[in-house]
Each structure stands twice: as structure tokens, then as C-alpha cells.
Image 1 (cartoon, rainbow, N blue to C red):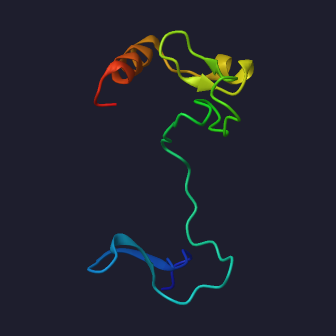
Image 2: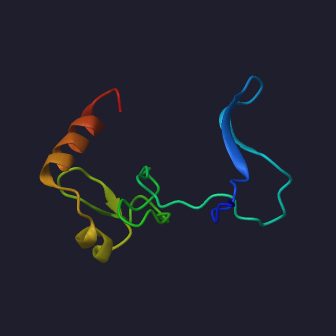
Length: 100
């Protein structure tokens, strides 16, 4: 009986030269989608908004969380971000640490 789920065009494996990664099982067409997934987590860098991850044009013009100094592109993102007091405290400690 045939499955209605198409076979994956890739596999996860270890390669001695390139390391662990996703490798094509067959030739892929240009622009062919091989993987689609929802974001589970994202890293926030100094140059991106902590809520929407948009690039910030400058560090000076960004709004900041008063507790942990996360940067935001605007008031809406600052208000929409859902980091709680505990996260804020941890981020404040990390940013003060030499290990950050």
C-alpha cells in the first residue's frame, strides 16, 4: 500500500568532510522547498529588535527595556514583548557577567 505522505528529499546524517547536516537524497529543482518549520526560538543580537527581530538602524535610537536593556524597534514591540520579570532579571545578570 502506497503512503500519501511524500518521501523526504533530504536526510540527516554525519559527513566526515562537512559534519552533521541535512543532505539531499536526490537532485533538487531550483527553488524547490525541501523543509518548512515553525520557529521555536530565535536569538536576539545587539542589532535586532527583541520582539520582531527586525534589524535596528542604530543602537542609539532603539527603545530599551528598563530592567534588562533589551532593544526594540518601537513602542509597539516594547509593549508586545512578553518577557517576564524572571527573564528580565536573568538577562540583566548575564549582561553584567563577563561570560556574556
